[in-house]
Length: 258
Length: 314
Image (cartoon, rainbow over all chains, first blue to last red; front, side, top):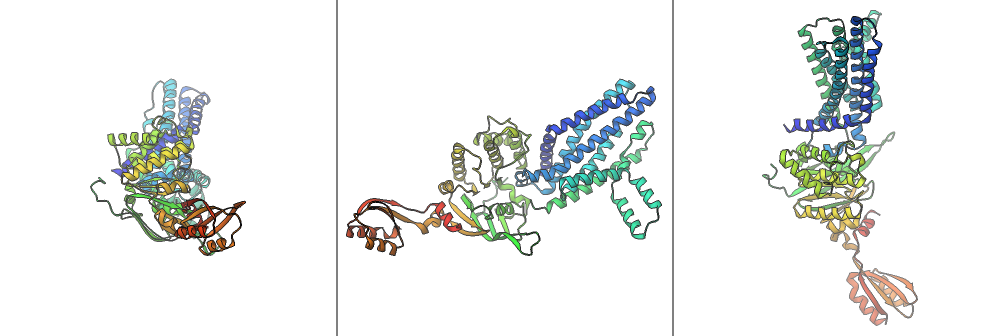
């Protein structure tokens, strides 16, 4: 139980610290501005307008949440080591994996605050333009959150062994690759490849997170029905992928000299 | 919880601690700590001295599990330092403690109370006691980015104390404190010591250490060069200073003083200071009578901890 308490305490500190930073406030203002801005871009007949509004707003939510998740996690552990704030915490009976999980929980808490602000703005716009709330939001946004959770775990693992600028760059790169995994794989495999290259491409294909599967934006925009089983499978995949990355991050951090 | 367990005799036991760092593009390694064996008994204040780069902070980092030793082992209250539970009874104050700067002093100390396993009213009570003890209660809602260096140091001290630890490890605790703060710290350390706590303290402020430490260890170039009570460490340089007035330069007196291992320092017309080991005090008095030199003053020339430190690491 004390382990869970430790994670909760470190998470709370990280979340408070993250949410009080000016850069977070600026990003939130920027996000709200973008979401309102997307409403002025979507000036067509009401049906098309709602589709465009949903599309642009969800893209804004994903973009800003991803930036917040990657930036907070990628700077979290190296920042603690650089500023020596890690010492008083690790000197307590706190295991290294608890520290990593706490930092992660805090970062995701900050992302949740940000997402809640953006979702509230999005809801306000939907009610203003359509007069009703699209219920698909209630599964589209949680899956967007799960996608950022994978990104944050990936960034956290990278930050345990790479410098934060490199970890940030690699996280953004992997975010792009994870979202373009299928078309990229198809285009690479369509060309003649040597045996080694085929193995390498297939390995990378399976190792890279399948971030596109968390994107239910199109389903919401085009009012498509997503089978429940698929939603559960995707959620389980996201949770297991995140858990694996957090385990890797904990193992790397446990061997680190502070 | 901890009160049920009997207190082991040793708070810290270090056996052959060695830490080597690879030097880029070189075969040989830099030795930060070399074969350090040290025992700190339970209770009392142990001063860990040494110049910059002597290996004090590296030793503390290894003790707290931040760094693995290249060779050697250590135990805190008989638990190996690799075990996270070894730090259950330890409070740590790093040199210039840093905390998340957007948090208030109260939030930081409260969080550390929770990490020490305290909750509910006990945690609340300890947080208030510790913040009052370090003089930060009135400024408890102040955000740390607005706190001075000394105030942050006080918050660090409160965070180290909040878990009511049996062993306090402090790295330069008085850095950043003003003279009043230092005096208060000395009083607090004495009170904690009287409470039965063990304090392991690294400091450069040797005069302060001398007045509060029960035992000291002196590190130089990664090696422990002396360990014992301040009296044991300073004993070798124990001596007296005799001020005399003599009408003329007395070569017989000078030669005899030098034979006893002393020195003669002429400070003016017919006035001189003799420095001799205290074992020769009566012989010196006899010599002065024989040589008809006028005795002005005799003062104890006990070597201070600082003198001993300089002699040992010099």
